[in-house]
Structure formats: structure tokens, C-alpha cells
Image 1 (tube, rainbow, N blue to C red):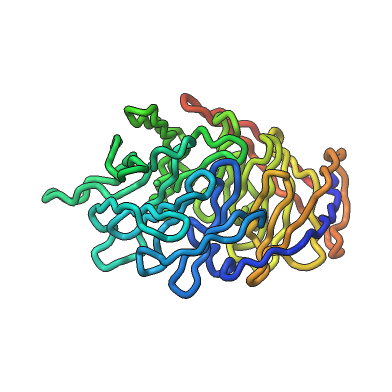
Image 2 (cartoon, helix red, strand yellow):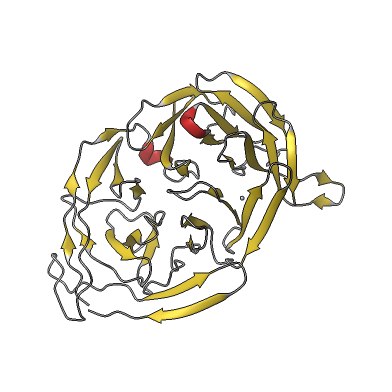
Length: 354
């Protein structure tokens, strides 16, 4: 298969102080309410902004005091929720705290454990992951709790990184990481009275994205060796956060290791997992790709975000040999597609050589 080079068109760069240092945090990049949000920290404050740069960043003091909370926006960016070590806090966009929902601490010594949260599409409730009760018999597991936005009181619970589709925020997907042993994944739906959860057959890794219909998920295995839609070659791995764009395209970064200085970026057809092109940037790009609803993308560069526009990649050509722009033969990944639903898993093998 010939993979044609694709050169992106550079748009205006966006200032984003602290973004490079924030990329290893789970709240740095979020798809929320039909848009992409970026969260950074600076001088004791939290800065939350839309990734497309259409509005100024919202800045408020970090209510956790340790810069290790998880921050998520309400619809319209009118409020923000922060999950800390021992409480969930709701703040207005000016930083005024409206309420706190206390819970048992994630860590007695303020370790790395923290919850995650997301507002329901109507903005009336917040779904958060908090520690379960630390009873005499020991830790009893994490809890999903639905909090009323107006008062902070629990509306429902069920016995935890939350994803929304870029195009449709009606579904919430909760991934509970288990160290190096994959992740448990659930669909969470609050009907106004009860919180319903359905476990999915995706135990290999946390979910990185869902499609608009909530039918297909992308999961990235711990270590990046497998993506669901799925396996890369043994010597390279998927890195960053692969997502679905328009249910048909996956912008994927490939490198020798998670934080490699240089990566190769491939637009991948979501139906066949065939690379449509290899993107050739005018300067090295890192592993993190932040997609925008118009199919453009952002890549971090120190304290700025480079904004790139792509023309529609050409369809893949018949198998042949070609040379990579660097002079060596480019080797596209061998991929295995896996389609997942709530009741079964099917496998399809797709092999490519060049």
C-alpha cells in the first residue's frame, strides 16, 4: 500500500502557557458539550479555555490547593467543577465557590489518586467519581454520584475518566483504570431519577473516544500497543489520544515510545483502519494531537499550540513499494479491527505492507 504524504496548512498559533507540562494530566484535554477544552495551571490558578481560541481563558484559584484536581466545564463555560482529594467543588466562571460535596479522601497522604467528573448535557447535574466508603472491612470500591448543580446534593448513585463524543454529548463513557491491568468501562445514563450503568466488553484499556451514535469506542491499551480498532506493529505504538472525527477518521500518532520527541501522524479510515496519508509537518510534532470539530488539529509547541488545517486525504492506493521522505522505506502499521457493542465482540484482521 502506498501512503501519500500530506502537508498541512498552518493557521495562526494559539498561546497556551503551561500546556506542555499539563499533557500528562487527565483533564488537560477534554471533549465536552460539542467542543474541545484545555486545562492548565499557573501560579496557583486553574486556566480553562476552548481549544479553538474563540474565547479568552477562564482563570480562577485552584480550590484543591495542590494543582492535582480534575477540572471540567459546564455547558457554555458558565461554571466549572473540580474534583479534589476529599471534595468536589462547583465554581462560577469568576472563581466563586458555590458548594462543596465532601467525600472520603482518595489518599491519606495526598497521593496521586483523584476523581473525574462531567456535566450532563442539560447542565443540571454533575456526574462524578468519588471513593467508596472506607468501612472497617476495607475499601469497598469507587462510586458514581450524580450531584444537583444548584445545591450540590446527591441525586443518585451507582456501585472512572469520562468521555463525550465531539459531535454529540448525549452519552457519557466512564473508564476506570486498573494500573497496568487495563480498565473497566461503563456507559452512564442519568434519566432524571436514576443513574443507570452498563459494563462494556472493553477491558484492555481506557476509552479515548466514542462515535456520535454511541455504538463504537476507541480504547487505547496501557502502553499503547493496541488501539480498538486495533493492533500496531511490535516496534512502534500508538501515542497521545486517538479520537473519532465524523465517525470516519482517526488522527493517530505513532512513535517508538509514549513521549518520543518525534512521531509520525497518520489519518486513519475508521471503517477499514487503513492509513490514508502520512502528515509531513514543516517541523517535528509531538505525540499529542488535539482535534477540533472542523477536522483541523492542534499540536503543542512549548507554551503555544500550532493550528493545522488538512485537506481531505486521498483514498489509499493499491499495494506497492515507496520511499519515505527521509529516504528509508516507510512501514505502515499492521492493524487489527475490532468492533464492539454491549453484547459481543467480533474480530477482523487487516494486514498492510509497503
